[in-house]
Image 1 (cartoon, rainbow, N blue to C red):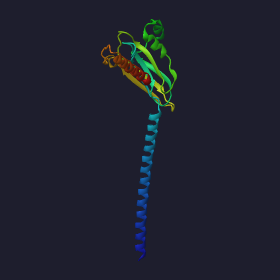
Image 2 (cartoon, rainbow, N blue to C red; image 1 turned 30 degrees about the vertical axis):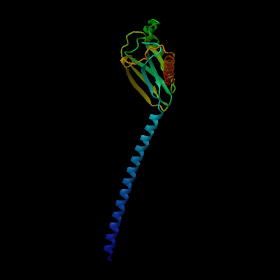
Image 3 (cartoon, rainbow, N blue to C red; image 1 turned 180 degrees about the vertical axis):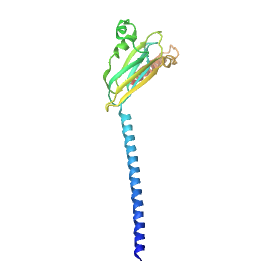
Image 4 (spheres, helix red, strand yellow; image 1 turned 90 degrees about the horizontal axis):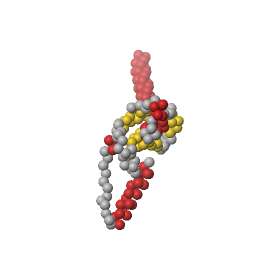
Length: 200
């Protein structure tokens, strides 16, 4: 082979090496991008599984017909800090809240959440009566703003409509004079009460 042939073969080999090097560089970049996305997704998944999750909802007081509770509970796996509870329509100024009658349940609700709650642990639940008897109750939006243990900030509004609780229907056992059936009804009622207590 002549020198020209060797030069041509060397040039081809250099070109092939350059192509393989470029392909390897592209593969490394693609792998790095994929690894970064996987790491970010794993971190987000871990954060969402371990974050505090505060929820506001309405609940009927089972032993007091017509009574509605506003419940706030941390369903998450970690502690929330600097928890602020805001209402829409908003709470009146503090002096007007203080002037409300003690029988006005909103007075106690507004005073309870007038200042941020410093720490709200997992599973901790608060409840306030916001309707008793046949009092009227308008829809209310409760916004919960808080911070997670990693410094992430959360703010979630909950539109609470009383019809979702008040329009509930249920059935009751028929009346009977049979002592065995009365006992069975009492047991069923106690079991329902125990289930209710366990869910709180």
